Amino acid sequence: MTAPAPWPGRLSLGLHWGVGAGVLGLLAFGFWLRTVPGGPDKTALVQIHKSVGVIVFAAALARVAWRMREGFPVPAGPHAPWERRGAILLHVFLIAATLLMPLSGILRSLAYARPVSVFGLPLIPKLFEAKHETLYAVASNLHDGLALLLSAALALHVAAALKHHWIDRDATLTRILGLTRRSGR
Ligand code: HEM
Ligand code: HEM
Image (cartoon, rainbow, N blue to C red; front, side, top):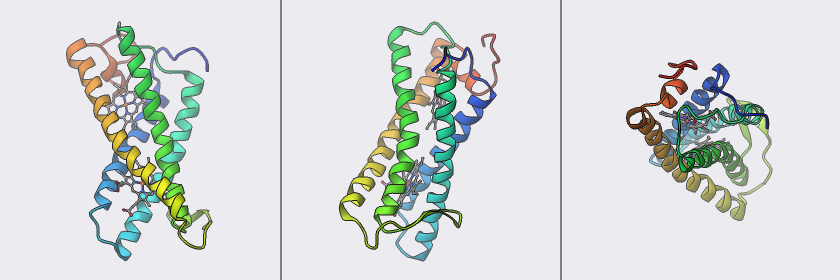
């Protein structure tokens, strides 16, 4: 990893909001899917969830590559050491979860003896002839459990962003919104 980026650039902002919107949408859609009764309509909805999830996975991979090249942006204000460490831990968890969510989803589908395709475009063929019970239990528990953890982490993430804006009054939130370019608030 190179030295940290001084300030998040356009690509960092695009990846943050692109992956972010995808993840928030998939979380909401996924939790709502729970309430839909089984049948052909649900199968079609799950297929949309899976296709969008694979696309978000590709964007999340690009983001990880970009983070490894750029490092995390330097803090926008004089943050306390515990705050800096906490932010890095939370960001690393968020990034790991954006990879583990789609990976566990893909594994869950394969264990259910289904292929994985993106809006009709075949990606991974069916691997099992029948549902693989153990793999399905592991993958679906991981997918559902991580979805809850990720939702809690995101609530903390947004609360921290608002704290920086309203209490610390620094440029942390405005710069990720693309409203502040380099020179403070
Ligand atoms: C309303 C939604 C969101 C708000 C207000 C928000 C706010 C912010 C802010 C202010 C930062 C800058 C931190 C800094 O400068 O050090 C940041 C960075 C970050 N956010 Fe968010 N965020 C949101 C949604 C998300 C989502 C959904 C994800 C991922 C699932 C996410 C993942 C990250 C990560 C990994 C970083 C570290 C820097 C980077 O990799 O771009 N955020 N966010
Ligand atoms: C960032 C990416 C993803 C997020 C945030 C996400 C989120 C969710 C959530 C919140 C649920 C409902 C969990 C519950 O019932 O407690 C869910 C269910 C599910 N997800 Fe994902 N998912 C993602 C990617 C994927 C991918 C890539 C696949 C497969 C290729 C997938 C396959 C599934 C399946 C099969 C279900 C069960 C649907 C049902 O039968 O109710 N997910 N997902």
